[in-house]
Length: 319
Ligand SMILES: NC(=O)C1=CN([C@@H]2O[C@H](COP(=O)(O)OP(=O)(O)OC[C@H]3O[C@@H](n4cnc5c(N)ncnc54)[C@H](OP(=O)(O)O)[C@@H]3O)[C@@H](O)[C@H]2O)C=CC1
Ligand SMILES: CC(=O)N[C@@H](CCC(=O)OP(=O)(O)O)C(=O)O
Image 1: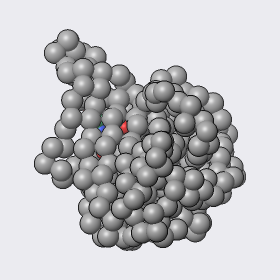
Image 2: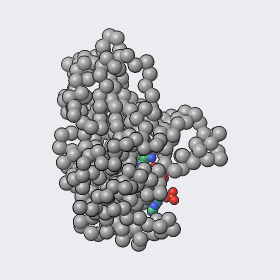
Image 3: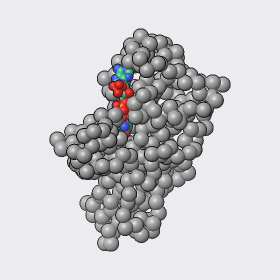
Image 4: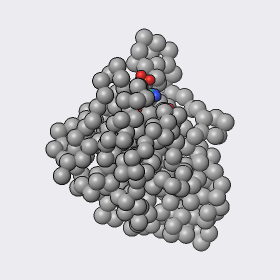
């Protein structure tokens, strides 16, 4: 069986990586537009309606437009933008989030790929919420650092183009505390209040660390670090792409680096306790372009088409 796939926005940062992961797969036939027609509405509409699955790797507004162009009721859409992530009519594309999520994605006509920062935050928060360790009205803080590829072509250009010398080595942003990912973290984290989220970007291309600190003494039942670790380890047991580092491994680490999973679709979670055992720092490490974007998209596409979960994700892409 062969499936047709159209990547709308295939020349962009996320689109290119998805194309690379799908190229050479005999079960996938990629539909493509010549460069001079890639923004042509009519040409895009034709392929959006012809493909079994269209993957949108576009800015939000163009992604909304693309969805409006789909008239064929058999055509399915996987959107990498943030346009539909909290829309209840769309399946949220984080298969490991709750038990039934992979099946929901497999059966959906519309799937929204998660944002890179929310992938880290939700992966840490949601299982603790489901287990009752966190209550839905918990006050949460999320801090994160991303490689500059997270900002797409324009940010990459500012770090690699002629003005590169003036790009800041490290900066916080989103200081109005209203980054577009806050709502997504709230909804899929299961939170009733939005978390305080402060992202940052550094002078490195790719890779990400998302941090969620917890004051255990302030939580119901005062859980121990081991309890927190047990919830996460149990939740992700047997998952191919999400792993929880052992507590002893985390205790032995002197530092955590953002680039370690680059080129992969992996997400690695850590629980760092203090000595008194009444505080933990939860961390998620991922490739913002991997499990944070193109890797997750290929994983979701495999689910939607009933293909093996590792297909196209076996090897590490050059970062
Ligand atoms: N980079 C990342 O880490 C992540 C990105 N995403 C999301 O994925 C989507 C794509 O991001 P990214 O690949 O980084 O962005 P890029 O800016 O690198 O790529 C976007 C692509 O879409 C093209 N495009 C813009 N408007 C249209 C249009 N109307 N019709 C057809 N093509 C169009 C652009 O062309 P041109 O450059 O010529 O304008 C470009 O090739 C975004 O919604 C982003 O938020 C999600 C998770 C992580
Ligand atoms: C470093 C950087 O600029 N990162 C992007 C988020 C990347 C991402 O997850 O993308 P979408 O949610 O847009 O799909 C930002 O903060 O807007």
